[in-house]
Length: 397
Image (cartoon, rainbow, N blue to C red; front, side, top):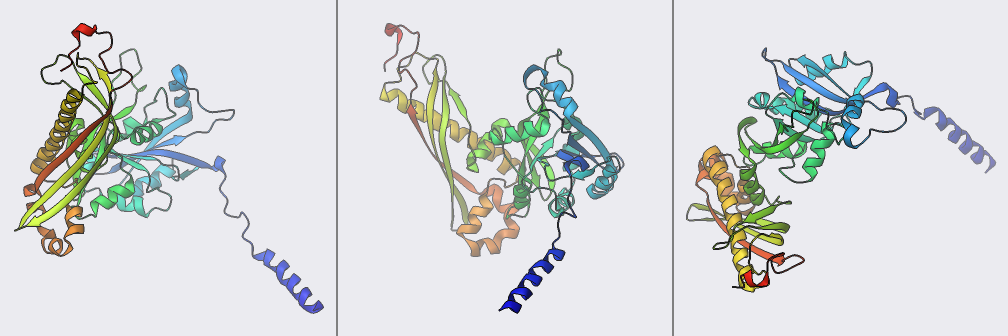
């Protein structure tokens, strides 16, 4: 027993020599932390990679409010490098930094429209293959140069990466990560949708760079190439079809009444129901929304059930119009299935889909879409009758 204990202790102490320790540690002071990256196409067919690097400052973070712009300018650094590929540009970019580039905190990737018009799949192969690049990073397509956008100094946030991340979480437009974009590209339809951003114009009193980029629409990809851009109104219909509508305020003018009524979205749910009968492909969109009234600019009495039912019909018609507008542009004009129709048919009819998937580009524009929408108004607000309107002027019918 004594010899066994001695042998065990010797074995235990000998394990210490095989411990790795911190031989491969990387100090923060030795890293250049990248928060955003932009890709642009150069005239000589090269790619320009621009990065936004966060500079930690001792003694606290940036200030908020009116002085935020200048503070942000001191906390970020933008540098660029050109290369034949994104990997080549990255290696040349490293030569311009005394610290090792660290991509683990890159939250945003911006691709210029000019570069997106070519096949972006090779560049995304590198992004997905690189061990440091995050699949959860958001991706955006911009009208101008990506290099110019990431150099903006937002008045409220630390940098543009923080601005775009916050806008994505608000669900104002589409919210697409690199992983989701890649999944759409290799999906049944081969089409993908990405938020489209532009620089927000500010009054002339502000400096040129003291602004942000904001989401103005959606960029449509097919087989890796940008085929078109849809505006915000069409995007709302796409979000309804994709069951991704989160934030919406609808303003309508009731028939026969003066003024407008605004409603705020509480909950929304949509579902695609595919069917194939006698060779005819049909999609039924079941959409349901619940809203609150937040403004009554008319003289209608919202305590009247007949008025509420009429407003629900108006709200239903608004959904149908937005969805139909999206179908006219995306399905008929662009022939790009970013709506999830291919996936719905694949799940419901796997054998038929296998036989027809190569003809989807010919089938998709002719798919009949039946819109079954329901709208409910749950609450009329803090008051039922029009505020500040005399009782004798209120319309009760």
